[in-house]
Length: 298
Image (cartoon, rainbow, N blue to C red; front, top):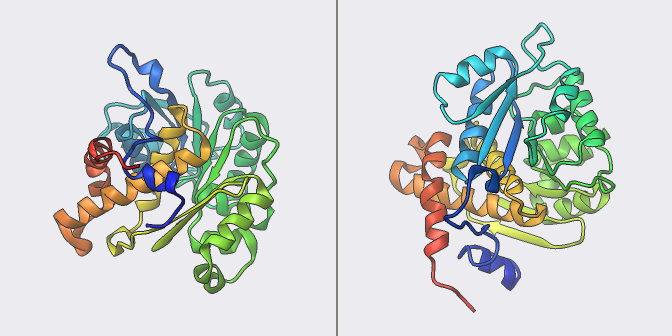
């Protein structure tokens, strides 16, 4: 683990975990609007929503096409479900943006997990970037649908967090994957400063960078995380903390560290071959509990 002293304190949960009193209601802990899923990709939506709930959001609303909601409702009891227009092929139609902007309960937005790599996805993501003031996490297909045309979002009122892995960063920048892997922090910082977005560059070593130059490098390799769905879990974690009112850089740090700790616990229990993203989700409460109970460090 590397980072500045204040970043190191994050691992104890001392500074960045949002405080939670007992005299509260669900409204005190925010509502994450998760725009995720498409035909054949309902699992991505379910994992993002589940991890957001486990990280403490008061409400999570899954906004997707009917077939994703029908699948999710079979196993998820806690979310609100918001059906969106289907483009006829099982993907969220661009005109859904109007309904999403009108969803007043949301305090943060998660966009991209399992949405599909289509021009309509980029158009919807761009409209949400331009017309919503909510803090926003963009992951997976929500990013790669832009290619190298991801805009400068420094003007947005709400902070933007992007969560590419190395291949997605290559798509966003045109840089070779090998170069990105050799210097993840440089690429994360460069993207954060040039686009105005907090950047989480995922990998065996994960770099977190803020447009103002703050940075953190998490060096906790875990090959058990190298399975489809782990990134959806991370996106849900970050979105949950944003919804709870944590600032963008701190929400990204919290999400990354909770995800890594939950992955470590899943690895101890199941091993790197057998652990699944759902095991990360199940270990999120214990990861956060460990952070809460860790001794304070000066």
